[in-house]
Length: 252
Ligand code: NAD
Image (cartoon, rainbow, N blue to C red; front, side, top):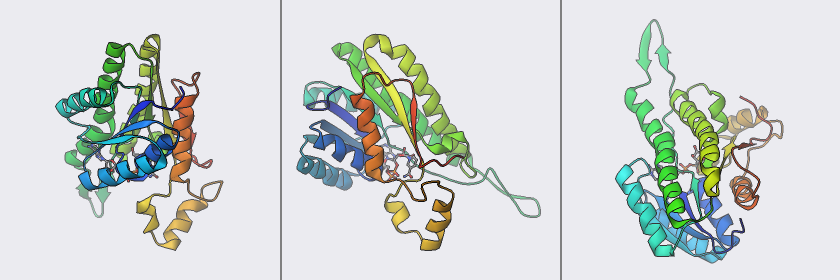
């Protein structure tokens, strides 16, 4: 798919990786619908996309809310006069061990901690994919859906909730690639390792060094490198049903 003039929804587009992807796609001439919970950050991201060379609009929407997602997809298609793609990027962390033990069990991962991550990182991806795929079929347009999984899908300590959600996203990607190919819709994913986002910028140098020591390339990935892979998936018409691992060689 050529990205010029293509209408693409990016969830969690207000900051971090989502914003980097949106700016990268905008520079290739795409028209972005940025979805997030924070109005101010959305406005700044829309302005950045416009100065990068692409059209953009802001949509306040909780990806875990069925009604809001349905309304948002319909609104984007109406505002832009069509739809061509989706990046399921919105995600949250609520890390914690399953059990905290010190002379007996002193803590557990709460159901709320589990559910919050499943709701946004897995149910949100399901809802957005379902609604966008339905709209593409209705409009009889080919399309591309890119899901952001994570290296944690292999199972990372302290991330029962997050690892389960990201593994779910990776396997659902394969299901949807198989089910939707007949309608001209490709579905693929990117599983980033440790990426240099705002969160990482405030970390102590010692902690950062410890983190990067196990990465064969000895550094974290850059948001632009993730954005580059997302664009690659849009542009390569033979890529579907696979998860592109982008982790500097790190294995969990
Ligand atoms: P981030 O926290 O900087 O940005 C996430 C964005 O999603 C925020 O703008 C937030 O407001 C939005 N969001 C959260 N919940 C939402 C909801 N319910 N509805 C709509 N928007 C919502 O995160 P990031 O580091 O840029 O990560 C982006 C994606 O990449 C996530 O899916 C994350 O799991 C994944 N990922 C990140 C890394 C990394 O190192 N940063 C590594 C692997 C995977």
